[in-house]
Each structure stands twice: as structure tokens, then as C-alpha cells.
Amino acid sequence: GDARGGSWLSGLGARAAGSMALPLREYVEHGAGAGVTAGEAAAGWGRLRLRPHVLRDVTSVDPTVELLGCSSRVPWGVAPTSLQRAVHPDGELATARASAAAGAVMVVSSNAGSTFDDIAATGVTWWLQVYLPSDRTLAGPLLDRAVAAGATAVVLTVDTPVVATWHPSEALIWDLADPAWTRVNFDPGYDDQPGSEKALDLGPHDIDWLRERTGLPVVVKGVLRGDDARRCVQAGAAGVWVSTHGGRQLDRSLSTAAALPEVRRAVGADAEVYVDGGVRSGLDVVTALAAGADAVFVGRPVLHALVEGEAGVARWHAALLTETVEALRLAGCRTPADTRDLLADDADEGPY
Ligand code: FNR
Image: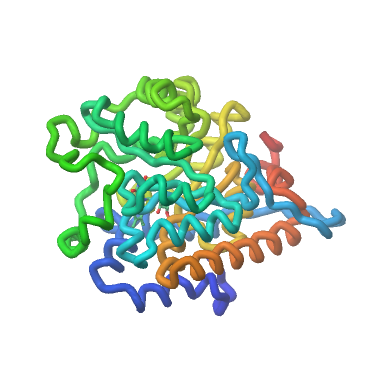
């Protein structure tokens, strides 16, 4: 959270809310259940405390991180979100162009409304997000298309055995949505096939299967516990992504800020660890890095920025970079790796 008020980033959500049609706004902002987890996400970062270094030269700050062997110019990426073409006609392509220019990874939702080829043509480094269906073989064509179009990783979302019950008004957006805004990378009629519903029986073997099937590193999204994170790594995951799905799945899940340190301790250096949920400022980015993340991902603010198309998303990346560099300098850090011993609770344990 940004207590100063007034910055372009801190006012972004409120401005965007004012210019989104009501059902779209509710779809973007909603949390499952009573909205407890969605409501606590940003505050979670504000509860962590940092031990800054002083007397260290912070003249030149390099926010670059290496993610799954590719260089990312910033320690954040774009989380997968659907209905980007409902937010702006350019949809995923605007997000992709701005993220390519910023040197950030974009994770493309399997529900995207732009084709993998068009997204790839922007030059962005992109990862495919998938939900696996009951009949795993039905995922084949989508996976093949993504591999052919140059996805460099697969993100398996595991927190959605079922889609959590929505607030009644949110169903409206799907009635209003143009079919061209979603799921354009599936075969026509995909959802009518038996076995296409979301798998209720996902297990660690699916991580290995996805890796074999695509030849790409697999990241598991939606992990909130150290023991589950270990199981992912043992099954061959290259990354574990701490997420509550923006508070849109199990309400009363703990905040990702609270879950992250345990997951990092469980994973150690055996895999990369990412986090999303309520990251809104550069200080949030640096706090998440300090709490054990190799990178953070951001969902709703990208949609808020996308109201103004590619220029909006470009401005969002630039503003987050300015704030992140400022927070790194104030903490006495020149790189994301330098943040590893900042978390106050870790004082006795030292950096992992
Ligand atoms: C999402 N999220 C999501 N996750 C996923 O794995 N596949 C998806 O298609 C979507 N779609 C989606 C749509 C919208 C409108 C939102 C807001 C979120 C979850 C997303 O990737 C991410 O986990 C959260 O949004 C992160 O929290 P913040 O940054 O929105 O607070």
C-alpha cells in the first residue's frame, strides 16, 4: 500500500473503476465469498517489516532478474487475466507490446481473446497459463499451438478444481461478452466435448506430464503451503507461484505475503518462487523480493492501466520501475538479490 497518496500508480485503480462499465468492473474487482482474501491481499505487504542497509553505494541500480533462464529487465511480470479485449479493443496485444518494450514477461491466459501468434508477433517473452481438463488429451492442441508460437514456459493453475461461486451480477459480464474476446486459442466446440471440464483430480504427475508434453519448464500457480511447494519441486516444477488467484477462489485463504516466506524456505534454491496478489507499488515489489520471491506478478493493475491501451500499460511499467528503483535505493540494495536479507522476521535465519 502507498500511504502518500497522489501518485499515478496509487490512483490507478480508482480512476479505472470510474471508466469501466459496471459488470466489467465487478468482474475485474470481485473476490470470492465475502471477499476476505481479496480484501486483505494488499494489506499483507504492509504488515511485513524491512531492515534496510545503509552506507552502501546505490548509484547504479540494476533491477534485472533471470527467470527460467531468460533475462527480465524488471523483477515483475504480467499475471494471466481473461477478458482483456473487454477492457480495451487491443486487449492482450496492447499488454504484450507495452510489456515487450518494458522487458517484462507476460503470462497469457488460456482464456485469452488474442491468438498466440499475434501475441508472439509483438516480440514479448510470454508464458502460457493453463487449466487442465478432466481428459488431459483434450489440452493437446492448445499446448501444441503455444509451443509452436514460442511460449517459453507453461504455468499450471492448480487452485481451481472448481470455479468458486460468483456474485450473481458477475455472471452478467459473460452474457455481455463478445465470444471473440475469449478462448480464441481453443478449437471451436471445445467446451462441448465430454472431458473438457476442469480436472478435479490434478496431481503432481500432471506437472511431469506437462513438462514431457511441451518440453517447457512448468510453473505451478496457486501454491500457499511449504509442503505442497516441495511436492511440486519433487514432481519437476521449475517454479512455484504463490497465489490466491486474487482472492477469487478459496475465500479465507491466507494472504500471499504471509504464505511466501514458508514457501521459499521449503523450496530453497531448488526452484524459482513467484508471488502475486495485492502488489500495487514499488515498495510492495521490494517487500515481496525480500520475503523470498524471485519475481512478482500483477493482475488487476494491468487491467486498470489497459483502459488506456498500450500507452496506459507502458506508463504502468514505467511508474512501477521508478518506484522500485527508489525503494531499492532506500533499502541499500543495488539488485533484487540484495534484498534477500532485508526481512525483519528472517533476522535469525539469515538469507536462504
Ligand atoms: C485473474 N486470474 C487468472 N488466473 C489464471 O491463472 N488464469 C486466468 O485466466 C485468470 N483470469 C483472471 C481474470 C481477472 C479479471 C483477474 C482479476 C484475475 C488471477 C491472476 O492471474 C492473479 O493471480 C491475480 O489477479 C493477482 O492478484 P492482483 O494482482 O489482481 O491483486
